[in-house]
Image 1 (cartoon, helix red, strand yellow):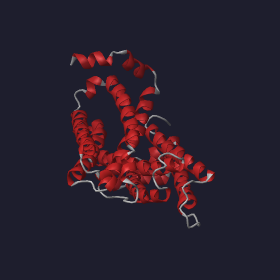
Image 2: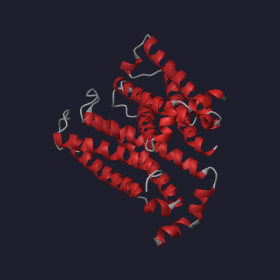
Image 3: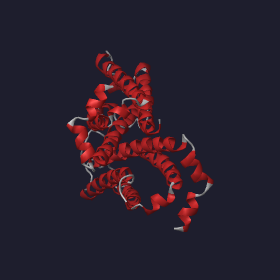
Image 4: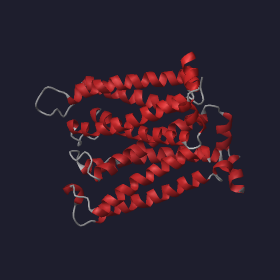
Amino acid sequence: MDLFVWLEHTSIANAIRTIRWLYPALETTHYIGLSLLVGGIMLIDLRVLGFARTLPLKSMIGLLPFVWVGFIINALTGGALFIYGATSFGVNHAFWLKMGFMVLAGLNALAFDLSVRRSRVDWVAADLPPTRVKTFATLSFVLWLCVVTTGRWMAYV
Amino acid sequence: MGFFEWLDDTPLSHFVAETLWAYPTLETMHTVGMALLIGSLGLIDLRVLGFKPELPLLETQRLLPLAWLGFTLNAFSGTLLFVSDAVMFATSYTFRLKIALIILGGINAALLGRSVFQTPSAGAPSVPTAGAKWIAGASLVFWFGAIICGRLVAYTP
């Protein structure tokens, strides 16, 4: 694809190719972002599902800003890594599966968020998440596991 | 170096190194374990340092089983990954530094548990001591340091 070839010749890609420490630095930062993003999301999901009940549900859902920081770190570092290797990532099936799982995880998070905003009963304060919300939490946990798994497998397919 | 060379030639080592799915599966497990360990322990550290004061300090110890789960996953997967390429890992300075940081992180976590969760006073302390804050800060340095070293093993001597 011409787009991928063009991406690989942008100044960002050239910088990553020329500056030797940049690629490992981006990868390492991607792992730190992953810890915030996936670690935070799993804590929230597990809390919704009933783990660590004595921690208020509302404050655990309040961890979302950390998750967003992780997401932004990984969108930026992941974007740069993709630009550097666009022609190989662009044809990598594990990569596109990963993107697919991320879209699903995003839609799922949106559904979760709407359930928090639109519900007439304040189930967050009452600590009584409806079954629908527990389903979103379970799906979220599984989908992010799939994102991590397909991400790791990119190097092997 | 006799022992590590012997380890490299064990059937287990050959199995992990040469079976198509074994290495990526263990790597995936290691990444998920990392997110669980750093996500839960990191949240306790941040709470001790004063973030999210609405989380009851003593109750954050409910997250410790999750940290242990992450640690166990990573001790298991990490050991097998080590065995698959023992000489390389054993002679890597970056890997040795990672192990040192994990040992420091472990000792540090035990200290954190003693100073925050095993306080003799009956009343629940909502304000951690200055000492506990130093331990929590050190914990973040050790564990994020371990992540950084782990990623850089592939790029450094």
